[in-house]
Length: 391
Image 1 (cartoon, rainbow, N blue to C red):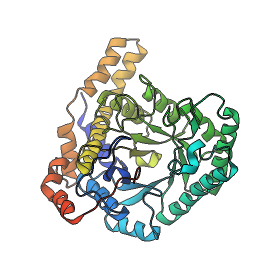
Image 2 (image 1 turned 120 degrees about the vertical axis):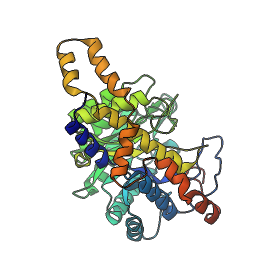
Image 3 (image 1 turned 30 degrees about the vertical axis):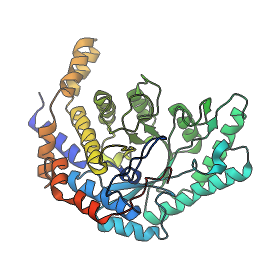
Image 4 (image 1 turned 45 degrees about the horizontal axis):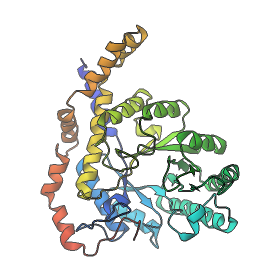
């Protein structure tokens, strides 16, 4: 049973939680087969930021929005920063794109062509310049680079090329900036991906230095992977920099966080709480990376934020003293029961209190639907664009 003093601490932790939304999730998006257009989607980066600010207005815990370059390219990034701040949000991670140009068919920073590698690396450096203008701390790197066939290229040489590009990029970082190096098991490469797993990302980050950290995308693993173990290991090494939260059933499905396996999300957030890493001062960027194909964009993102809040609240309610006793006594069933008791708690009333204490509606989705914002953007926005791919 949790004491009132402990409950107050839980509520403070939930009120201080921060979740970053992705600009691209507000635009039309889909699969490689079809993009289904929706009315009212943003036509430019400012409208994406306005939608992100709306999510923050109803949740109170999403004060930053990640940008994707060139999908969110503008002439004046300082002005874009000012616009975001006028709406009560800030610019978060700057995501690079070295996977959509024809030049990158055989890779970007690992391409055998030195000219293509130069082009890709220059884009990474350009992104740091955008960070300077927007006040962003995080440079998010994901590489589609890989091979489809054995013998297509030299695996070792590609790692050397990757390391060289990362080193040049790392050396350009400012004192308060850092690299978030993402990984992906497969797609679009089928034989070998140049950054396929957390271990490869971790090794490159160790080689680079303290300003390089791993980004865990919860959809980028083989089926059955114990993601919370990866979280625990990277926290122990102080090398966990960010999450890309989403849900998956088969591969990188990019569904709403907590939709497919809410118990996994709870287990992940327990390791975050246990590691003392929930506080924003710790430095982890809890980002969403989702692709809302058929569902309404803004309510889906609000729901995703709420799902993460619920998983976090349950993780905070774990009786860690009781859990530690059971673990030390070797009481396997009791240890599991302590976790399950917290997971099976209905935390929605608790989160409603946290929101009410912050002056927010306890029901963010309902409040959004009653706000008239959706009807307003449908009326005002004509010709909304795709999130970026296929545009």
